[in-house]
Image (cartoon, rainbow, N blue to C red; front, side, top):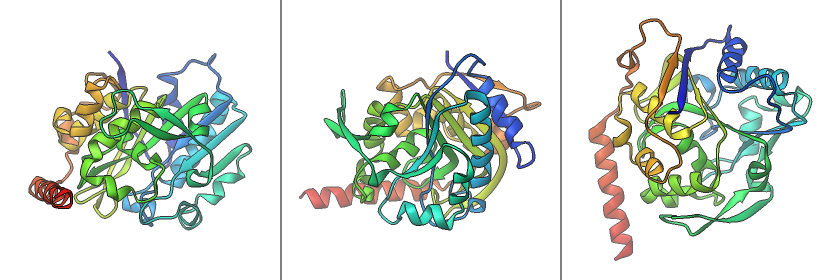
Length: 296
């Protein structure tokens, strides 16, 4: 059974905690030449909103990765989306300062090379464009956020990969988003998952919800297991989150995991997020009827 590591994190101990998380899964002998990190910049929102990757935490994470693995290069990636341009996000949200690190590059996926790959058992796609640098990296890290999502109930590692769908107008696929998430994760594999829950987001996420300070960090090698843990933290049954269930059935990972935590008297119930299930089901019905109307 895959293990999931859960611990507390804050701005003062971030490097120590990231080291602890990495050491739980990788030995001192393991080295990686080229590391690629997919972050989460879904909107023009600062980190204290809980919506986007925190550049301070990413900076701490980069320091730990460099000391641990001594890589030749680390590439931090995000992709253009329906309402955002990544280059402007890098500038406005404080990520350009990260290039002060030797061998660290910020990359707008939309402007770089893609390769075509078949999608075995694809629900919506038979082939997909895959970001070449992601596919070629020795260690592919999914650096996600702990958030609720008005479309998918949860945002975590699996949903974070939706951002690497090549087309800019990703909103066109929202009516089948769970199937799309499964197709993407079938061909774009993740080696290590980190979910930042220092400041998460509850309510009407993933961009305009309510910040929720949890001071949590979740990590693991299996994105389905990590997302299942995150779902339980936020108050959801993993099987009832459609994209997690589909990804489990597609053998992308397992919903069953062995939780490793150093949090005294830990209980999932201590971190339940606010989420309107009525609003979620209403949105789901509207999308279904809109899709049927368009098809007719």
